Structures are given as structure tokens and as C-alpha cells.
Length: 574
Image (tube, rainbow, N blue to C red; front, side):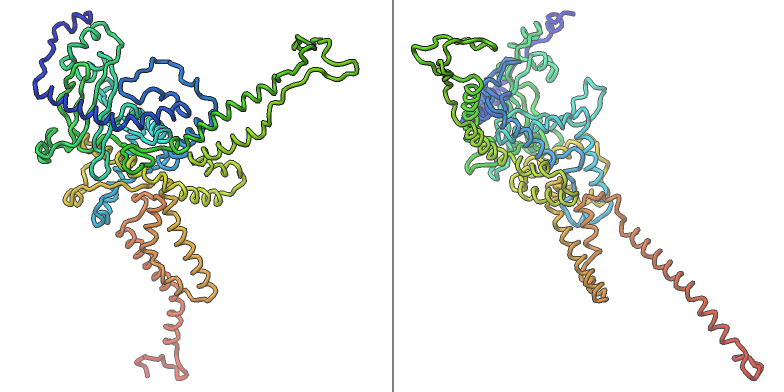
């Protein structure tokens, strides 16, 4: 059946007054958010030209780039691009490494967390999140890299987490991640500085709109494009914000029982594309690199070194001119001497020297290129320092370091970058993890909590177990071990083991195992520890008894031996 015939039976829907009013209210909010963001957009555009040209002309509402358009024509030096790439690798390896668990779920109730079953349940939840996060259908690794790239280039990133749309994939369940380009995000904060308002502007074709919302929701203005299978993109908005108090009822099971309201709007059609929905947890993990007082949006490394990037670009232009003059120098000729020269290899130019061999043609000096090189190196050093690259260059400059030296060095570097990257755990990892936990519970992908946890109520909290955090906590364990080693040496020298009594190994060892990220299931519970100790004490007692048996037998034999009178001690035969 042709497209025109297939959709002919569908009738465009009427837009009620309440829907038109909601659309107008959202458009007013969207316009207001644009006003306060456009000044930032100018700086982002300037930085994109130098370090991330693929994002050029994407920061203003309505901007459009024809697919395949060339964007690197303004770049002269690639130092900024390379530094951004390394910055993403450093952040990913320190905060969100793929090969380790970097966010661990625990309960906010410390008393409940003392229960082993609760610990095991949260540990299982942590492993489940890690598995769902790195599933092939989730696409987290690629979108997470885009998120770090946005942080480094523009100081802001947004990662959207939603349930996987499995209608075309056999009904599989899971997560789906989308790194939202900064040009599509317009957000606001609450009174405590948390991002809780998001309007995302995006484009989609009429066919994509039907795939997502159905033919019944498609505005009449898009019907011709759908029937012709046009690839023209249309503008849409996705608005997520806190629900008004008089509309929020936590006891309800529908969307009114969710703290955040959500709806999609067609700008061309001026209508809602779906019935009002909601979220229990804010679905956008928004993170900022560095915030200036009074600003909602953050500033990134590019904004901090924008003067150095622009200076380096200008210096590289001058350097290339100097190098060009050195390779193909400007010739100085006498005005009534040689008028034309053949510069081809092997050519003969008569009249270029005097009879005694003195040259009549000279080259114009091209300047001191070494000075230009040193100036560029100075700017490159500033850029590398800001993008955290110089902190890790020593690893490649000293490949003969031992493993212990490398660990100590990484711990030292981690302490230097912790103030900069530490907030990424709160905004990026924290918001991301809570959204994942909420989704997993809604989809039934976590087992039922143990009775004690159901009685106390779920209060999940995320602990930072990234290499950056573990490097910071490793100093605690290292300090304890150094103290124990020092006390042990004193005990050996003085032959007095009481010097080790000041250490509470019962408390320290489990916490050191936690610092080293040892799974709870690898550790024995209290009952197993007590059973092991009882078995060891019983074995020691049996061994001592076995060792004492020869002495006891000798004493018994001595007591039964006859005296000089021929009588046996203790016998009745006296």
C-alpha cells in the first residue's frame, strides 16, 4: 500500500485549549533560557573552532549544518585537539574506567549496611548496573566519551539515560544512553544549585516522529512530508521539570506520582507529541567542570586557555610563513642586473655573479625560527597543564620505573587532579547512578530486597570507587600498614609483642578490604569467622593434648612402678 493510502484514513487531531496553553508556557520558558545562554554560546563557538570544529555552528537555536560540511578550515595548529583527546582519556581512566567498577551502591542507613544480606544485595545491584551499562545495546562507552569531550571543550555535558526501546529488537530489556550535544541543551537550577529543569531542542523527520509517537500524534503540517517520505528535519522540544506541588501526589501510581513531569512538543505543529509523562529521578546527568559565581553553565579547560590557543594559532601561522621563506627564499637582485632567473634544478643563470665570483643575488633573511619554536612550546606547555596532560607525561618519559614507583606516582597525580575532577562524581556519576538504579527497579531487573531492607526502606547512595577515589583512600591503608610495620620491628627488637596491641585488626582489615574494592562475597561473615576460629582452637587444643600424652604416660608409669618393699604404691597389698 502506498504511503498516501496508508495514512489517508488517519484524521488530524484537534488541539484542546489546555494543550495550547501548555505549549505556550513551555515556549516562553524556552525563550527565557535561550537569553541567559547565548553569551556562553559565543565563547563555545570560539573554542569549537580551535579544538572541536565538528561542533561549530551548533550552539544557537535554529542553527543548521548541512551533513558533510567541512569545518576544519580555520585550524592551523592541532595542539588543542590532541590535548582534548588526551584529557578525555585521562578523565575516563580516572573517573569512569570500563574495566573496573567506579560507582558502588550502598544504603544511606549505616545500621542497615551492617547486615551481610543487605551488603550482598547492594553488591549484586552494583554488578547489575555495570553489566547493563556496558551492554552492546546501551552504547554507554561511546556516549560517555562524547560527554567527557563536551566537558573538556565547553565545560558542560549532558548524558540522557532511558529504557532501551526494544520494539524492533525482540523485546530485550536494558538501558540506552545518549550524550546530548551542548547546543541542544537548555537547563536551569533550583535554589540549591542542582540542575532540575531541562529543555532539549532536537530535530527529527516526520517518519522518525511517527516511529516514536505514532501517526495519531503527528501534526497536520507534517503529513505531506510523511507521505512523500521527506528527509526534512522538524524542530521538537523535550521538557523535563519539577511537578507543581498541587499536581504531585507520591501515593499515586500514574505520572502524577512522579516528581518530574515530561512532555514533548512540536514547534511547527504547536502541539504535544505524547500524553504527559514523568520521571521518578531526573533523567539527565548534567555536569559542569568549573562554575563562575552567578552562572548556571560551567566553563571548561578551553575557556581557561583560550588566549593561549589563539596565540598558538597565530604563532603557528607566522612560523609556517618563516619556514616557507626558508625553504623557498625571497631573492634580492640588483635593479640593473639579472632580470629573470631560472629556478629549476640544473638551470644555468648567466650574470648571477661577477667575474671574480662574487654573487650578485642574495636571499632575504627569514628571521629567527628558533625563537618562534620556543614561543610555541611555551603556549603548548600552558595548554597541556590545563588539560592535565603534563601530569602524566612522566610515565612515558621514564619507562624504567618500577611498579611501586608507578603506583606512588599515580597516587600523587590523582591527588593533584582530585579537586578538578572530584565534582564529576557528584554531578555526573551521582546523577547517572541514581537514574540507573531507578530504571532498574522499575523494570524489575533487581531481585527483591532482603526483609530487613524492605522494612527499613530503600535509601540508595553511591560511593565513588573510581581509581581517582581509590588512590585518595589508599593513603589510609598505606599509613596503617606503615605503622604496623614500624610497631612490628619494635616488637622484634624488644622481644615484646605487646607493642602490636594498640592496633584493632578486627576493624582495620575489613575496611582495608573495602578500600581495595574487595567484593563482599569474597569476605567471610561473622558466623564463618567464628567457626574458623573455633575449629582452629579445637585443633590447637588437640595438638597440645597429643604432644602432652608421652609426658602423661610417663607420669602414670612412674606412679605404678613397685618400691623397694615390692609393693605397688597405692595398692591394697601393703
